[in-house]
Structure formats: C-alpha cells, structure tokens
Image 1: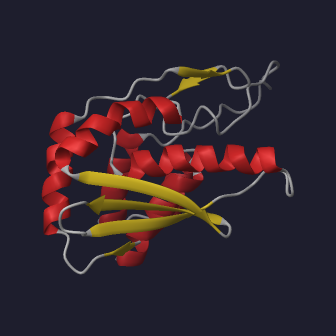
Image 2: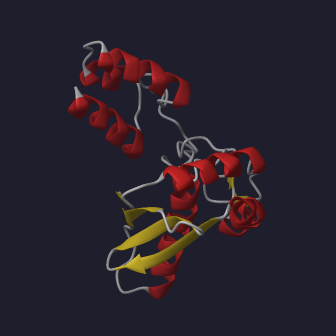
Amino acid sequence: MERSEQIIELTKALALFHIKVGKIKKDASNPYFKSKYASISNILDEISTPLTESGLVITQFPDLDGLVSMLIHAESGQFISSNYTMPVAKQNDPQALGSSITYARRYAITSILSLNVEDDDGNGGAKKPTTNPTPSAPELPWLNKDDFNKASEYLRTGGKIEVIKSKYRISAEMMKNLLTITEKL
C-alpha cells in the first residue's frame, strides 16, 4: 500500500462516506457455484453519490500483472493506493483477462472502502459444489469473520497458527491476514 504523507482529510472524508453509504446488496447470480454476489455495476451505483458527497474519488487501472486502486480526497489530493495481483485463468485470452480485471475491481473497491457487502468471505466460491460428497471424515468449517477475530486474539496471546489450521479451513486471504498478525508479534 502507498499513501500520501498526510491522510487526515482523506480519513475524515472516508468517515463521512461510511455514514452515507448503505449495505451493498447481492444482485447477481453465479450459476456454477449456485451463489449470489454484488456486481461491479451495483457496487459502483451504490457508492457513487456517497463518494461524491464526501469529496472522494476512486480510480482503478490495470498495471502489468495487477490492478492499481486509488482512493483520493479531491480537495486535498491526499490518497491511499494499493496494487492487487490478478491471476488469469487462461493466458493470452482477452476475455479471461477482462473477467479477472472485473473480479479484482469488485474486491479491491469493497476492500479499500471497507464496504459492508452481503458476502460469505469468498468461502462459497472457494470450493466447487459436489454432487456426491464422500462420507469420510467431516469437513472442517470455514474460518469466518467472527472466528477470525477469535483466532487473531489467540495468536496475539501466544497461540500457534497450526492449531487454527487444524480446526478450520482457511481461505488464502484469511491466511494472509493471520500470517500478517504473526509477523507483527
């Protein structure tokens, strides 16, 4: 992440934005995973007016193998910026690249603005639906937001990440966040 030297005006504007923006509803369906999600157009529609009223601008653009997202306070020029690496399913396929960009934009916007989106932490899309589940050992539950907070506290008090991994299935993003906590200790 990069940022301007000062971000106080940006922070004030972001606080105002959060007062104005509502919860983002899921409006699109993914038939493959039999799930719903908030589309990029729905997210942009929902945040457009609150951003403008708060004096904020968000811009995104592809850069080499990533997507750069910038949140700018229009009056002061203060900004925060982050780059998201975009894996592309099929190389040299413009449609796959476009799909990857749209996906990355959606998640980068919700992250940089800390939007309240009806979501399942990506866990619904993390595994393909099965038609014949194997009756072997029970699957571990996914580490959700509430359990993540407990796991974070556990790590901060000397707990081991291996113990968390033995009790939960952990998405790549959640694992990255847990590892960040252990690095800070």
